[in-house]
Every structure is written in structure tokens, then in C-alpha cells.
Image (cartoon, rainbow, N blue to C red; front, side, top):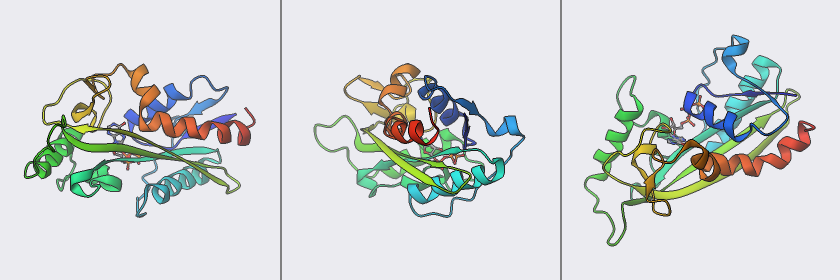
Length: 203
Ligand code: ITT
């Protein structure tokens, strides 16, 4: 059975491949099909955007397709950047580093709550599986932590260097990938997706 990993984000791609590596699945990347698809994320929720991406890739490829819509929610910012996490910094061609700096600028006026190591936050991930016949399956996972002002670690991507996990005394970017891939929002969403992946893909 083939499953298309319906994302253009290389960080997500590597993690999804690692997390699903034990399933008897041929994981296919868009580039292997010569597929260059930019789906406009017009939805207002992670669910809507994950479905938009999964359906677009499944239509274009004729393969079952798994999309990931994810983001970082910071409590003191009312859940921002949230579903806008990938496009948060108002700079053309912003990099992950630009987005981290922009987030820290937004946080600067807010004091860190007493006794906490940083600003409370969580990563959220929604995965959508779309089948060529049209069925859609969804699963979600979250991972709580704190935003800190000093970047630590070289692994991962996106906001990982400023996302601190007290249980490990490490940022997400300091965790070895095999640990991130056990505890992350993406790992949890894909764990929750396993039953339907196994069932509908006949694994
Ligand atoms: P695709 O839509 O092609 O999958 P994208 O990067 O545009 O790629 P999203 O719209 O879902 O994906 O945006 C998610 C953003 O949230 C991502 O660019 C990061 O900035 C952040 N993010 C998601 N998961 C993360 C993780 O595990 N670690 C750090 N940052 C993460």
C-alpha cells in the first residue's frame, strides 16, 4: 500500500516518515511523483486546512494522502499564532528564525507568569487522511510546554528551539529526534490515527 505524505515542509516530512516507519506502507513524497502543489490554506481551523491539503494531494496523485496542519498556541496571546503559525511574521519570505523572533517580540510586553519557566503554550497537530474515493479521517494531538527567550538546540524545525519541556529540562530542538517523535503533537496525532490507517489501508 502506498501513502502520499501531503506536505511541502521538510521537517514534518522527516518526522512523519520516522513515526510511521514501522507500518507496512510505502511512504511516497510529492517530489517522487513530480508533484508540486501549493494548497492555499483558506480554512479557519487546523481540521479544515488539513482536509484541504489531504484532498488536493489525493486528487492530484490518485493515492491515499496524509496531510498535517499544525501550529503553536500561546496562552497569553489568546492562542496565537495558532492556525497562522506558518505565516505569522509579516515579512515576505520569512524564515523559521524570523517567525521565532516575531513571536518573542509579541511576547515581550507580557511578563512570564510567576514561578513558571516561560509563557505557557502548546503545539497542536491535526492529521487528515484522504482517500481517492473521497473519504476523510481526522486525528489530533497536542504537546504542552513553555516559550523561552533563548534559543536552545539544533534538531527539529520551526518553533522547536524556543519550546521548553520541563519534564526533560530541554527544548524540543534539544531532544534527540527519536524522543521528539515519541512525545510531540505530531507523534500523538499519528498514534491516534494508527487505528484508521491500519483499517482503511488494510495494513
Ligand atoms: P505544509 O502546509 O506543506 O504541510 P507548513 O509549514 O505550511 O507546511 P502548517 O501550515 O501546518 O505547515 O504550519 C505549521 C507551522 O507551525 C510550521 O511552519 C511551524 O512554524 C509550526 N510547527 C508545526 N509543527 C512544529 C513542530 O513540530 N516544531 C516546531 N514548529 C512547528
